[in-house]
Length: 326
Ligand SMILES: Cc1ncc(C[n+]2csc(CCOP(=O)(O)OP(=O)(O)O)c2C)c(N)n1
Image (cartoon, rainbow, N blue to C red; front, side, top):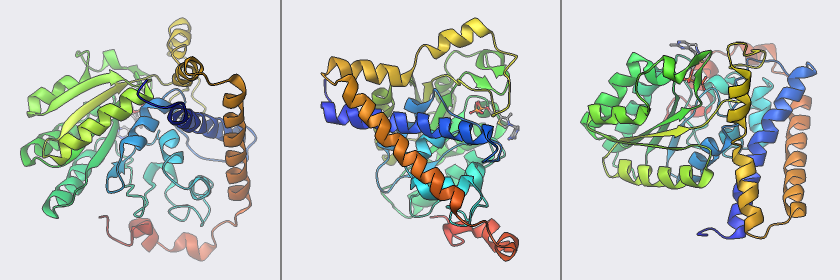
């Protein structure tokens, strides 16, 4: 095994943090202590944690509306949670939620709620990096449903033509709301589209955090070398499209079968093979739970924005990016 037991334990901790963070969101929504239109990535933790681990300190990330497991491993947990609660101490003063969250110092670029529209924007950021000769890349995350949008074609085409440093990372969770991937495209692997743009593409197992991390590291190195590319990670969406979606459109048996491939269970098995004990794993889970409980406690108690703060529209456009993105 290329990774030490301690390195594997770190991956485990990150995956568990992602899972438990969203479970806490579900609990708080159920109690009416939190409001919002949440799209959860439970089951997709490896596909997100792997990406976050592959990013270098100079690299930029454009996440999606379903990226909490990744964000909680990249950002300050208290500031992130305050943002979800709509508090002024959140990343974007409570105005962005996870649909538009951004952080200049963390090189987190804003999500675009118009699916697909964010792809040409991400290409623009990457083009700016190239023009500035920065040793940096944009990893632009999109879902399988988003991959069918016209803007994605335009963005990928121009990225390839201009050789900009961008990795298009398709987090394929099998669903676009109620539409399964095989009802929106005839191709088996979305990464094969790369050929049409003169790029390279690769499809990988998105429930394998190590595979995701290593593939992204290679993809990032390539993109920095002027070869934009596509990586598709296949995973599975465990929850409804949004919290509150009963998911009646899914076949129960197939759904249960898909959830058996759990990225956290996989890492647990690997760790046990490497000599980790059940006690060690339980201690990590407890430590993570305390961190999450503390962040939710903090965010819940933070004051709500003042009416003046709510009406300060400059923030809506400039947020904490200070009016500039790069
Ligand atoms: C242009 C546009 N069309 C439709 C929507 C509504 N919408 C929000 S999420 C979603 C499904 C997206 O599926 P996918 O890209 O696979 O991401 P997932 O939600 O599965 O993570 C849709 C259609 C939107 N936000 N923007």
